[in-house]
Image (cartoon, rainbow, N blue to C red; front, side, top):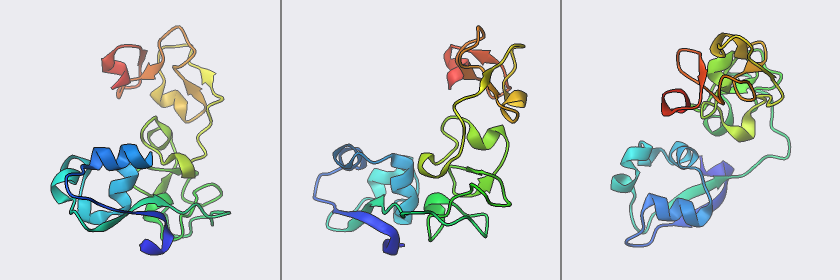
Length: 161
């Protein structure tokens, strides 16, 4: 909804999504989420139309209301936060509240609407997925800085994606 847009941008001929995002210092997932006609990040350039005006940044509310319908962040018409909601305290990247490690993993949350703590205890046993929900992570342990999809710590691309 344009009602919650804090900065509009009119596309000029020859511009790409990347050039617009770099110019406006905007994250691609949020740009696509608030401009549904762009469909997806990998289809952004083919759907971008010169002369049209897009929302580059959402307006940050002075205080975000607590989600009452599971929607949060860019998917919520009021930029609702999950903190304090009955649906979980993390705002998943697709705009709904939840709880557990899958909602708080790097890249899985909307940073402006998250309550994921970075002050967590390093894992001692080589696992991190099952421990994230109780506050452990692989970063800072001898196991590596990243958690793999299967829940183990390491530093290679297999762990860090």
